[in-house]
Amino acid sequence: MIILVKKNAEKRQVDNLLAWLKAHKIDPHVSVGAQETLIGCVGDVSHLDIDLVSALDVVESVQRIQDPFKAANRKFHPEDTIVDCSGPTIGGGHFLVIAGPCSVESEEQVIGIAKAVKAAGATLLRGGAFKPRTSPYSFQGLGAEGLKMLIAAKRETGLPIVTELMNSAHLDLFNDVDVIQIGARNMQNFDLLKEVGHHTRKPILLKRGLSGTLQELLMSAEYIMASGNPNVMLCERGIRTFETATRNTIDLTVVPILHRLTHLPVVVDPSHATGVAKLVHPVAAAATAIGADALIIEVHNDPPHAKCDGAQSQTPEMFAETMELVRKLRPLAIR
Ligand code: PEP
Ligand code: MN
Image (tube, rainbow, N blue to C red; front, side, top):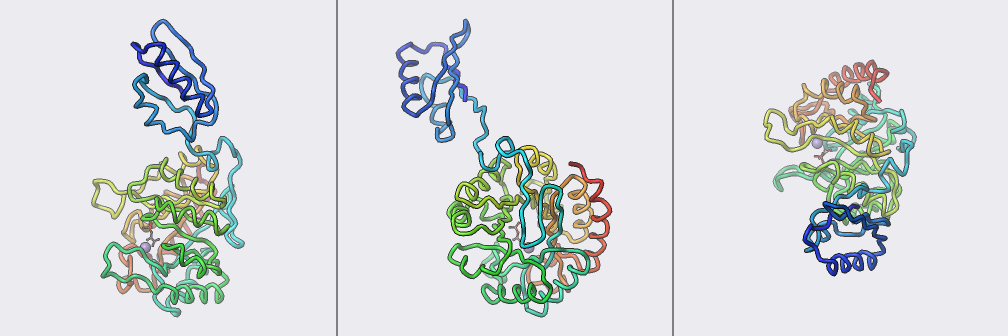
């Protein structure tokens, strides 16, 4: 961190600032120039409130030269993290596709879809049991019963399962779940992030918040990792913008940016990003080409009658076509 001192600062004020920094275990290096005085701060500045330092009387501006995230930072961990999802792996050149319904609706439905997506090449099954819905009057998911149905589909097909956790009190129900999803709406539910850091080593699929910046996404991953769970995957699922043609706006540039900033695998969700089943195919192709480590795609046997997100759900036939294209593009992917 570099502090630029105000031009009219008195020596007494600068001395007070130096003493304050030392009290915070920072080793300040002062360089007095003809035009300005700079203080280079050596030491762990991650605990300093940068806004508070900026607001001090004597301070003109503050520049952070270190990223505020450590565990997720590629600078401190140059190798790609490979996350083991109970067999299938993501990251470090390992690519996979997660597919399944938005919500588990019945055992028959989820087993049928699981078989279809497996036949097309998916290696993980998704399905929501606890659903974060905008309206309290919408289908809220089958809860614990839905989880049992998803586990039955895992038993039947051998596909590891991915499902969303909304409340840490439900963690005990998730013993047979392979990957825990933290949804977009909970990206900054810091207590929940700490809980999945402390109480499990299961892989966490962390979705980007509706208006979450990349820095915020990385800081949320940092919460999980700093709490003890290093198995985190980041998921771009579209962000909220002024555009209304699609449900969200896909931000694919984050894939190469995240690969530079972090060693964690990056997953793209073309279903929630677009909200339109026909757009899932081209966006899945683009996400693969730009170097995503995995895709998560919603597939439903009967989209018009889906209890949740039917408009963006591919049929098993559409999904099989997407898988075929993704397989062709994967060797050409940028990395
Ligand atoms: C989902 O995966 O069904 C979901 C609700 O996703 P998101 O949190 O990205 O909206
Ligand atoms: Mn959904």
